Length: 163
Image (tube, helix red, strand yellow):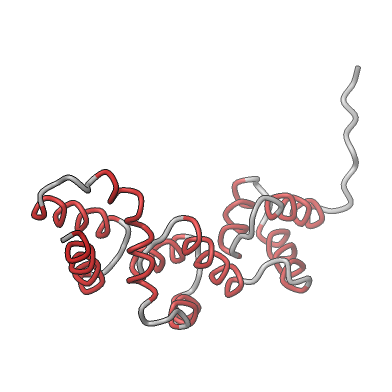
């Protein structure tokens, strides 16, 4: 049986449809959509047209994406300012948008996020000597993008609560 191929109206229409399918899984930035469509071998004009159409319909907005990304990280996989900044930059969010979105977070949000991130591994480390426990907490939180002041605050709280 021969495969039936649907005739497409325009390459720009095909690029738009490919972008909409790509957006079906989760929100994406303009840069991610651009990379995806380039990998599918669409030409620059078709990509630009598709992205303009997506913006006009409010399917793509880097600021809304950055807010969504930070919210998802806070809820499911807590990260510090440094890690969030890096992740958003890797996804093509502009520095000004990143500064705006991360600037809206509460000043003590990193401390709370760090404590949430530690909730699971702390149970494994409960019987360790304090020095080793401090080292583990520090290494764990550095790996998740928390800054030194936040880490020290969390270490001080966790060790004092354990005593």
